[in-house]
Image 1 (cartoon, rainbow, N blue to C red):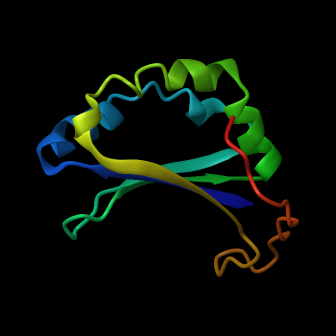
Image 2 (tube, rainbow, N blue to C red):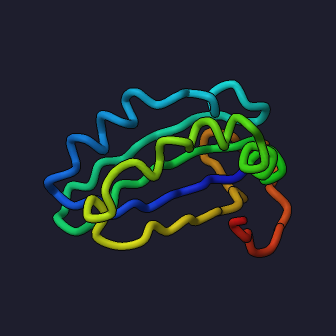
Length: 118
């Protein structure tokens, strides 16, 4: 199992628009093999990023999503907010789950090395 966290730094005056776009997202990822969940986390401290957090059965499932037509369609709108809406570049993080307190028999995700975005 892996987690993917996309940290997105949104200017305060664009937060409402940013959140509304996620409320109306295409939802194409929801049907992808290996997809478990998607959470969008709102920061409580000024200057902290939003976090788009997804959980996947495996790294391969996530990589298949990134390489899919559904990914391209689902992200077609992601560049439509003005660049001043973002206070800095986003940061994408992948983490391999080796322990989950809710799944004591979890099969540990093998070490996969760095992830390169296209």
